Image (tube, rainbow, N blue to C red; front, side, top):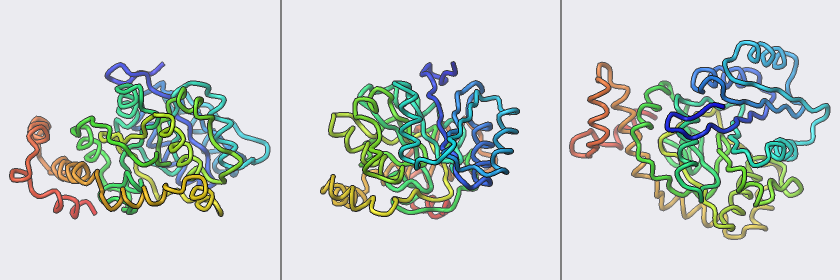
Length: 305
């Protein structure tokens, strides 16, 4: 079984297979580059993959250093019902659900696993993303272009503190779910929602109501081509079940409690991208992060945009 560098056991990675084989190809290639050998990966196909994607999956499974499994339903049951079926089969195993158009940066999985291990009250862990809604970087609530240098961002993220600040809900580009917490919350609402986007929000709110935490992993980054989207009627059902959800989310965006953390990541990413900057110097500057010493974080954010 694979372990994070600090000793935390790495979770199972579930990738719900979509219809975009080019995006899936990029995701699987990124998994090979950034995920420790031997990590368990489950490609779960709700009868979505076409012939080219099936050939791609077969080649990847043959060559990957990861422990990869693939399942395919004979008939589609919908993404929420299918994902709930997959997660239920995982029992109390901690599981990352990774979007099939996501591109993880180096170190992503071990850092998310360590965040979960640091606090037994944490139920969900979400990393930064260019398309991460409340966890978006470099600006909250905006979809930025796919970053050009994920290695620099990963190095910058590694220098971030491990504060695990609260999020209003987990976000679907990549989310680590504590298996025991998910079981106690009753899993996904397969009858109420048609999209993973809405079902994950609902699950997060139920978990919070039970006293669990939904947090940001400040030292991990997973890029994505675009944000998840609700199915028709999902937002109305969320509003009916959770009347304070939209006001709470709007208040979070307006207050932007993660602004300082995002600015710090911007500045560190700009430093990590500086040609010729020695690793030991970068580490020293990261520890001594100070606005008068390092160029303004706002300017660094603009450079990343």
